[in-house]
Amino acid sequence: MSTIATLAVGFGILALFALYWDPKSRTSPSLWIPTVWILLAGSRMVSGWLENPVDILRTASEVGEGSPVDRLILTSLLMLGIIVLGCRARQVWRVLKMNWPLLAFFGYCALSTLWSADPDLALKRWFKAIGDVVMVLIILTDRNRMEAIKKIIMRVAFILIPLSVLLIKFYPDLGRTYSLEDGLVTNTGVTANKNMLGVICLVAGLGCVWLFIRAIHDRRRRNRRLLALGAALAIIAWVFVLANSITPLFCFVTGSMLIVMVNLPGTHKPSNVHIAVAAMLSAAALIFVFPEIFASITQVFGRNTTLSGRTDLWKALTAMDTHPWVGTGFESFWLGNRLEDLWSIFPWQPNEAHNGYLEVYLNLGWVGVILLINLLIMGYRYLIDVYRRDPLAGSLRLGYFSAAAAYSLAEAGFRMLDPMWIFLLLVIIAVPDITAHQEVILPLDESQVLVPVSFADDDGQVFARTF
Image (cartoon, rainbow, N blue to C red; front, side, top):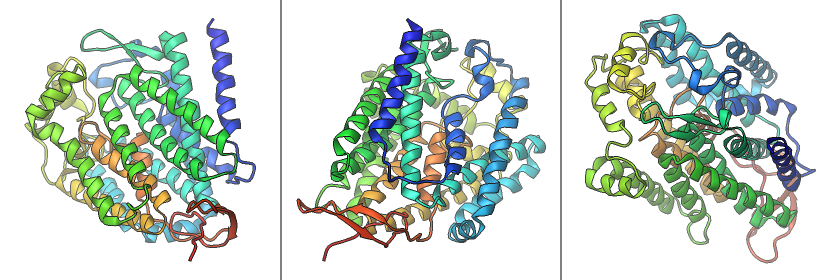
């Protein structure tokens, strides 16, 4: 039965790509480098597929050692990525000059490795984090940037989500694991835990919602694309149920509503966007600020009022002795005695703060938090600028930005090799105009036609307007 299911899922994946395939879509073959990187980040490293999740070593002394195989693969991808960017040095230099907050944040991360308890390990982790930036730059400097972004979304949605269903239903030894806290079976799919399964549903789902809206306006192969995206969204909804991860589901629902809303006629004003984003983030923040509201919501979803132990963890973390201004060093908090002490208190063995802002504070102190907030503010200003010129392209950025900001209230969303962090970087990094020549759709009225133009916005998307 499992063999038949594998063949069926494989055929289904090929069918999804075939239905959405655009013969005129041209991107660089180097796009496969960030594709592999993101697929690994959104599932498991190679070593994770070679061992049963139940048998993974869980002692504090072994955290941080990593796998030589994984290190070799990631290093190889990073080197290939650097070579590609070297061939695009002129474009990359223009992008970096526009993104000084990004350089400031990662520059400080590198500096903080000096006061880490394990500087060598911290520096290795910093290079992994730089790998996320390298992969995003490969996507953003592609000769057809918008098509590159679309392909990345499709590859994540059409590959990882169906494979997760296959593993959960027909290969439970790989697709399910046991909770360390209560011993219950949890569905993990291609990932290592249910929260990450929810994350790939989140990033894939938001992308598919946006692609669905684009397909509605595009008469070329519209029915085929809507069928593929509708099937993908249905599978994503099913996997959300299997994952039972509330935070990514909340961010998906609110992020999707935001994408749809800002594309409605009469809503294309930045002021409306600011209100919608503020409302979404406020709704997420209320869950944690007001215990009564939080308790009622968690009871509906079958959760306890400590957010599955998160609030107790936050109290313990804020009470620990760390340098308030500079932190413990990049990705260095969850090491040594601190980790042993926390694992002796919490049987579910946390290895993150389950709050992205708190996580940055623990590792980088207030200086790191300020630099991160500055990066987010400048990124938000850029995506609003994109939205002013092209609401459809800007709506994708708004969806991912808002989802990442809300998600990081209950999960560590600003970490290396995290799909949520990678997609956030993808939408907040400013890029210069790249002129191209292609056919575009004017989704304005019933007389929409294909028009060849040569004008590009900051999103790299070529479009035309009627006057």
